[in-house]
Length: 213
Image (cartoon, rainbow, N blue to C red; front, side):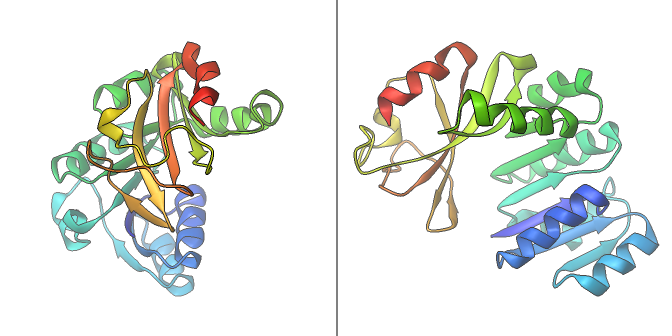
């Protein structure tokens, strides 16, 4: 996958390291020169020094060819602006870091894949081990009214070999990973055994997900 990360600090830099190790093609944009230089020295990735709110630098990183986009700066205004640009380039997966949790609704109104407050995400990651050990929780969204999580498709799952468009349910499949590759979900996309699905559903419907898997 080709992945662009805006913000190469502690969060963005660490994510870049992980994604590079997983053999992804990574582009990092960082406005602090020293941080950009350090990242360029230690990462097998394209590191661009500059302000990502300038569309030119995003184009220099070939944003139009990206499969995923992460806005991970410490400034919500910047993250929102660059997410809007990524949206205009129709990047399939757009994820934003939300530093002030009260700003989460603004990001979600934009229609991005996920808006994640890192403090809240850490707390939820600990809690989900007790609450939902069989699911990999990603984040609560829409002010806690909905949840996004990963779910592996087993051989016994009722949705194996079914097309996404044929499913009549109250959850949305926003992403499919098959053999490590991202597949943009379309109505005609057939769900296969072994797929990892990114699912978004209202909080009250989480208990009903198991019946499909």
